[in-house]
Amino acid sequence: MRVTLADTRMTQELGIELPIIGGAMYPCSNPELVAAVSAGGGIGVVQPVSLTYVHGHDFREGLRYIRRLTDRPIGLNALLESSSRIYRDRMERWIDIALEEGVRFFVTSLGNPRWVVERAAQSGARVYHDVTERKWADKAIAGGVHGLIAVNSRAGGHAGPKPAQQLFDELAPLGLPLVCAGGIGSPDELVDALRMGYDGVQLGTRFIATTECTASDAYKHAIVEAEEDDIVLSERITGVPLAVIRTPYVERVGTKAGGFARWMLRGRRTKHWMRTFYAVRSAMQLRKASLDPKATQDFWQAGRSVGGIHEVKPVAQVMREFEERIRSTTLTRN
Image (cartoon, rainbow, N blue to C red):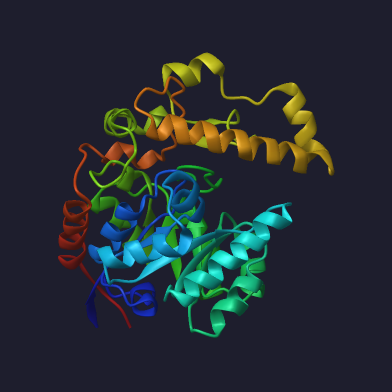
């Protein structure tokens, strides 16, 4: 049977036209960007801390604002691992509100997703979990997830250690829909991932370099000008390697965490204190660097997909180019 690459398990499960997820990004996932990805036929995913803390919306009203911009499906990102009971309570409330407001897709990361799956089950919502290797996928499946987002070595943010093909080969036997996260900046790269066997792709960096994203022009320009080799891993922001664009500021401060931080992160008890410190500091630092045009600390998260991004465009144009390339390509399925 000849089918287009738009016909995947993911598009069928989520009720969307194109197998494209607009990845949740702190601090860059502003409501207008999320809505534009969904309106273009994919599915935009809300990053709740960005929606509330960065962009200043009450959570429920922020979701309703997005729904006024588009009636297409949207998703919510739930970062699960936290030593803070306050954060856990807040995340539980955000998920409950999202379900009340009609959100039926959740992307979970870190931690055990079981409680999210159980909450979502009553409404038939689907939960996909970020994984970087097989052992985390096995745990996610034990938690009842419906799909896996395979974060590979070309991703922005906290990239995985393995290339897309190796990760696909490890995870495909598990039988769940697989989403390729990392290295997708152009229509050809998207098609390559779908031909590899992935059911969809998750894009972050490509959507920062759009007119709808409220990231600073300096950040967008840096993405457009960067080449793949300009992406380096820095421990200076969160304490663990984070993919960022190499800038004069990054070269000046270095990419390795200090000796005290490394010692704290190795301790069973002290690592939680150090992670909390990094979380607070990095949230403030990334927000200023990414959104403030006058920022002097150029810590810009990006993946190796920068090599395929050559222009800042409206989301609708990006999605249209992806769609044209997807629908013009067919493959044979049994």
